[in-house]
Amino acid sequence: MNTQEMRGKNAAELKQELESLLRAHFALRMQVATQQSNKTADLGKLRRDIARVKTIMREKAGQA
Image (tube, rainbow, N blue to C red; front, side, top):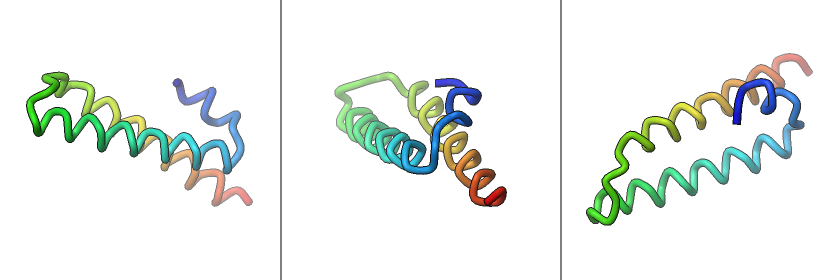
């Protein structure tokens, strides 16, 4: 999901997206730790997506 799509969402949708990303990040971390997956590059992508959502949430909170 790109930044423009995220900016169009409201606070509740962003919170739901953040929870989804955090769950996916945890699951992937566990898979990498138990050597079930070797997609370590996806960890960085998920971290950046989480940071992107948090930044947009912070921006929206500052505007209100």
